[in-house]
Image (cartoon, rainbow, N blue to C red):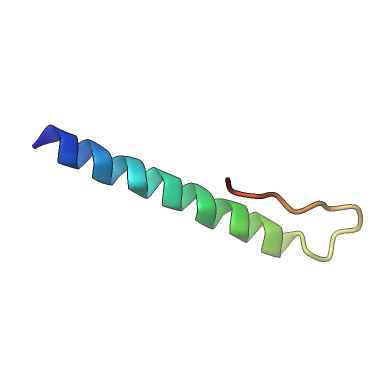
Length: 40
């Protein structure tokens, strides 16, 4: 039971990180010298 909850919560944290990195890349796309981040 708790393993499934942990796995689900862990997956949500990873996806939130991907969304955060994508949002940061989009927000700074026109900033000179900005280098995109990769969510590995």
